[in-house]
Image 1: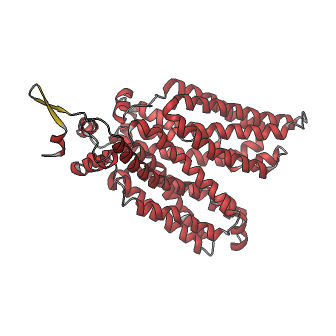
Image 2: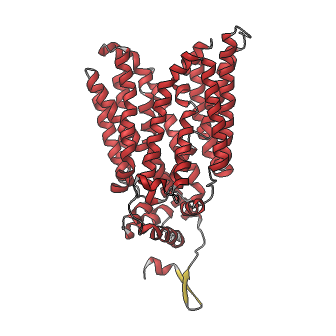
Image 3: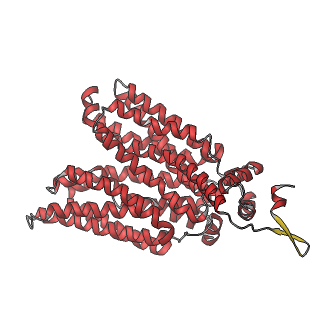
Length: 469
C-alpha cells in the first residue's frame, strides 16, 4: 500500500485524509532537517556579507601594494554592484531553470572563482574582474536564499528562519571587519571562499524546494522532499494537496514576462515587493553604514568607538529582534516600528549637524550623533533590514517568482548603488539636510507600510497569495 493510501481513512464509504497525531520526535526530526537546510542556505547570506564588507578593511593595503589611485579603488569597490545587478537580473530565471539548490551551487562556484582571482591579482584589471564575479554571486544569492527558505519552512517557523538571511549577512559583514584587522587583503580574500565551500557541498545533502519540484513536474521527488522536511512519520497529505492544488490552478497560465507584472491581477504583488526594496535602501542605510566613521568624525565623535558599537548592535538586534519577534508580533508591526525608529535616528543625526553648523550646544553634539546612528541602525536591524526579503519571498505566486523576484532584487541593488553614489553629494550640499531628506523618506515608508503591506504571519504561501488576489 502506498504512503498516500496509508494516510486515508474511510468515512461514509469515502476516502478522507487521515489526520495523524503530531509526534514530538517527528517535529524534532522535521525541525532538524529544516534548520540544517536553512543553515546551508544562509551560508550564501554570509558570503553576501563578506563581499560587501571586504573593501573597507582592505582599502589601504590594496592601494599600497598594487599602487592604485583613489579612483581605481573606487572602481574596485563599486563594481560589486554592477555584478550584483547582473546576477539579480538573471537570478529568477536561473533558479526556475536549474532549481533553488542549483542556483546556490552555481553562485558559490562563481563567487569562489572571484575570490581566488582577487587573491592572485597583480593589478587593477584582474582585481576588478574578481570583484565583479563575487558581485554576480551576491546578486543571485540575495534572491534565491530567502526564496528557498520560504519554500521549505513550515508556516509557524517561516518568518524566524527567513530573517536568518539578514542575520548571517550582518555576521559576514562584521567578520570581514574583525578578521581584516589582523590579516592582509589576500588572506582576507581566502576567508571569503570558506562559505562558498560549505554552500556548494552542503546543497548536495539537503532536499530541494518541494514547491519547485512540483512546479517542474517531478511529482515523486516533490513528495520525498516534503516528507524529508516534515519528518519521516509526519502526515504531509494536507500540505501536499494544498501545494498541488495551488500549482494546478496556475499551470495553465503562460510563462510570465515583464509586461505581465503590470497586469491588474499581479500589480499589487509588484508594488509591495518593489516598494519595500525601494524604501529599504532610500531611507539611506548604505550611506549611513558605508560612511558611519565619516559621520562620527564630522560630528566630533570617536569613529572607532562608534563603529564598534553599531557593528555589535546590528548583529545582536538582528538576532534577538527580528528573528525572535517576527512570528510573534508580525511583519507589519516590526516594519512600522523600524521606520519610526529610523525617522527618530535621522532627526537626531540631522540635529547634531545643524547644531554644529550654528555653533550651538557643542558639548552634546557627539552624543547626539552617536545615539542617532545607533538608534537608526538598531531600528533598521529589527525590521527594514530583514523583513522586506521575507515578504518578497512570501507574496509572489510561484509562476511570478522568477520574473518578479528578479525585478525586485534588481531594484534593491540599483537603489543601493544610487544611495551610495549620492550620499557624499548630499553631505556636501548640507549634512543636516541630507538626514532630513532621509527622514522624509522614512515618513513615506510609514505611510506605504500602513496602506499597502499585508500581514503574512501564520499563513501558508498559498493563503498569502489568495489573500492578496
